[in-house]
Length: 162
Image (cartoon, rainbow, N blue to C red; front, side, top):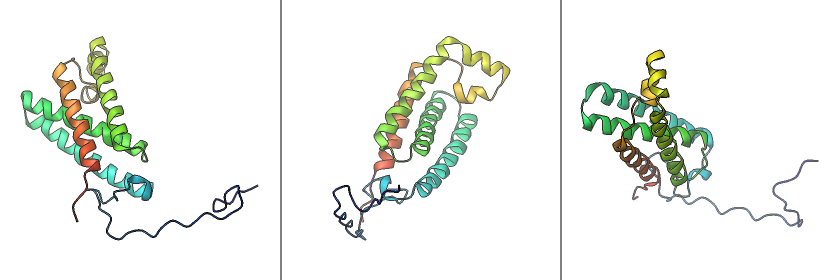
């Protein structure tokens, strides 16, 4: 038997939601202040995929064009931003700060995985794995991941002034 979502178990109809306010503040991706729950998931995922594509291109440019500690730090922060975007794509209705915590934990897990030496061995067999898993542990990478995930969460929740 199919249940009518408009009539609760008590039998009285649910009140209709208030009409949308035309002056709601919007974030950088155009989503309203109420969060991602008030827009279709497909629109949010499209915006997240586009942002992820830009981050991948930017990260590769930084990785290959800028050498030294500054380039490594920026590339690692962008790696964390990409992790944030991928997790936001998968868990499209999750709050940004929750996604940021999980993205940071994922990045830290991958960094700690480097202590086993397995990513270095994998990179010898399949060189592109070096870009995904890295090869050597560095504590400064953990700071870059924190900067990247916190920055992504801040941008994701930042609201424009109308």
